[in-house]
Image 1: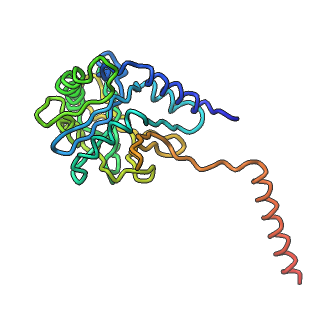
Image 2 (image 1 turned 90 degrees about the vertical axis):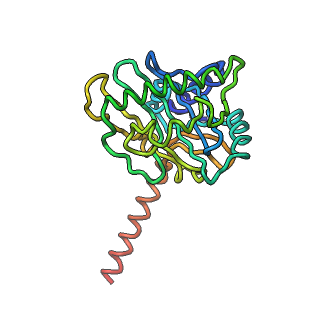
Image 3 (image 1 turned 180 degrees about the horizontal axis):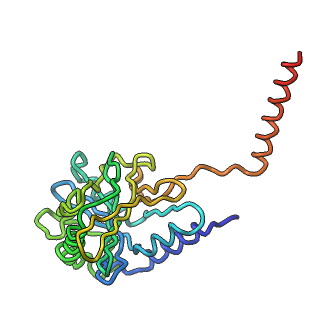
Length: 262
């Protein structure tokens, strides 16, 4: 059985996620924040601590093989229970991670049908977005996660930890939408996953870069309520397949020459 570096890296990432107590989502104040899944429908919201840091995600991305991360079990159960009572016609979701130690790294999904622009908002606005996520959102949300290993929380619009407060454009500081809807149930329909970099000072616009691993990295929630971040790859032909292809082309050439001679 063959194991790629990517498979091993992904297994390490997910094992670390499973082993953690999930007491709080790291807000990246010291750098290297954690990924979180946010969903809301205008009435209540659901937030899941994906428990994977920015560095861990990028390590899995840069390892050999195709990226393939997924969250099932408690995500599938808890999200399935929430979405079963949610107003699906107005449901929105996104994935987000931030850090504020030096240059700001912000990881986010890219909204339905959105072409990712090369530049984002001004750096000062993006720094404000990161600070607001950390102080106004996560500082109010994290105490609700508790210390019992709970990895998700549901809130109402009255809560400071209501996911809808982030909005489509991260407190209106992004220049593109980051949200998807319940139709994102396959790689093809999923959301592009990207990284925004913003300078620690000044107002130069932040730069956006889509994550690519042979092909675009997408995030989606499958029909079975499993969360995925992965890159779809085409199978690489085996050497014998190439040999058969060349033999076939040679035979076609031979037949064409005989027909021409005749």
